[in-house]
Length: 83
Image (cartoon, rainbow, N blue to C red; front, side):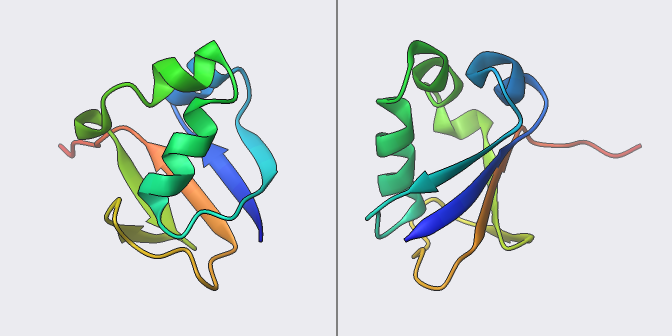
């Protein structure tokens, strides 16, 4: 399957770009993260601590064990605070 993967804030800085289109056979977000981590040192650094990350699938917040079937867009970003 083909997915648009978006990176925000410091993830974008570590990966080196804010968006990429990937071909994947990953079944879950966690599987996708493993594939992405192997792409470059920057990707590996971005995904080194999943506790400090959030993910959205087609703009809906999700967990890392969420399935990717039918998903078109995956966005990774740090937790946000409001004020």
